Image (cartoon, rainbow, N blue to C red; front, side):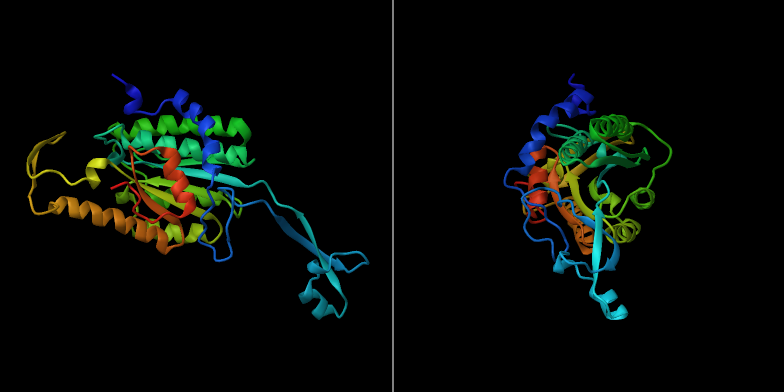
Length: 307
């Protein structure tokens, strides 16, 4: 049995470092900010933070004149800038019970870990500090750390957390609680990637996302299994579950009610995410993770699942 189909493995997540460079090939960062413009890197470039203003001196760049202080004092003043603090990239993975599911290629937990690993390696290449968090059957938070050590610590945690998605645990941590905890440890301007099941994006999560988006750049993948997006031949299907067996009825004239409900829930989750200013899309767990993240960075329409 190939266990990498059911749980992510550290060797596989490490190997994805070699593919992280593919994200920058023709990709641009899709930001919800109006002034974001076109970018040739998946992430925003570094800038300078305002430090203070002082009296203007010959040779100072006129573009940096502080007009507010000048007007208040009656004397020309110029702005001084300090290098921007190290930026942080944070990934948040869903370990809810729904993620321990798969009919093709792998469980959604594995697909989520692969997307997270690519994001982490791309961020390391940009010189970012790495932070990771999880919610669902296992809630966790790994504080930011720079370089390869930060990446390894985050990926090790993601492997451990993902195994909890198929374990029997008594309670679940919500996305909203995790986002609020994450925000308390981030400096302004962080990049945050969410990889979630549609059931996790509720009203509380929407409010937490709105708070997070005030200071950070957020994007999200709503991860689905191919079965959740496919049109099945008409018939009656037997389904086995822990609670026993059930039947799924598919009629010849279109989608079954449960298929329609799934689609509506997935698209509602993307709508909630975009409503608060996050870049978001639906992706299947059997898609190439590089293509999924590349499409997200390019701002491909929300339903981009190769239907």
